[in-house]
Amino acid sequence: MKYLTVKQVAEKWNISERSVRNYCKNGRIMGAVIKGKHWIIPDDVEKPKRKIRAGKLPNTILERLKLEKESKMPGGIYHKIQIELTYNSNHIEGSRLTHDQTRHIYETNTIGVKDSVINVDDIVETANHFRCIDYIIDMVNYPISESMIKQLHSLLKAGTSDSRKAWFAVGDYKKLENEVGGIKTTKPKDVEKEMRNLLKKYNRKKSKSFEEIIEFHYMFERIHPFQDGNGRVGRLIMFKECLKNNIVPFIIDDSLKEFYYRGLKEWKNERGHLLDTCLTAQDRFKLIMDYFGLNYK
Image 1 (cartoon, rainbow, N blue to C red):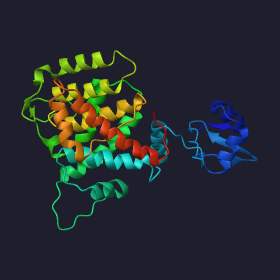
Image 2 (image 1 turned 90 degrees about the vertical axis):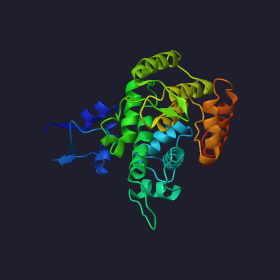
Image 3 (image 1 turned 180 degrees about the vertical axis):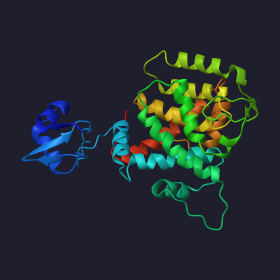
Image 4 (image 1 turned 90 degrees about the horizontal axis):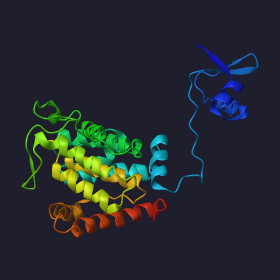
């Protein structure tokens, strides 16, 4: 293994030699050892992440989410979003897990069941949805693409009973026709073309308005590109796009479910129904941001 001196590492990381020595003394550089009177450091080691300092937390939601995700901070807004977005989005789609069970899975990676029967897919998709939220935070600054959307679907449905069905394409567009709420959706043979046209139109503008994000969601759900999981993938995309465009995100909870479905169904005739529902959910999310001391417009 090749080793570097403190001076060489300081130049490589663009920090002071004193900082490098402090990292070594505090055991924050893997493999660093003292040779004679001087520290030597493996040349392939990565620069340690900066520790969170009291009073130095960012006050914008995206930066706070990135920080709390990276540091695995419990009890913050990242923690809350993981539970609230996962519980509510899965619950809309018929998951029978309670809010407490969802929280327990997230916090302990276990689930306690007493005097009840739980669908294994509900548990698997809950754990998978946590990974989906991490994915959209990691990918937040990238434009939406087919590969990103398919990856979200793959993460959500991995290991479920659907993934063992020959006709169910996990991480790929549907093979069979499907309806949503009795409304016909795009035929499988046309999905790829319509998705590409939708993404091409949406990605023309660098920044998006609140209404443009909601319109994309409607068009995505109208195409219904996957055999199952379209609603959850679509709501994850909305959350991501709000973060990217510095718009307060939102979570559709059970009390707004019927208004949300009505809004999607009537979008072409009256946009106000879905927009008002999402604005109501956004107002509720602002209360969460207020609690955690985050700024918003």
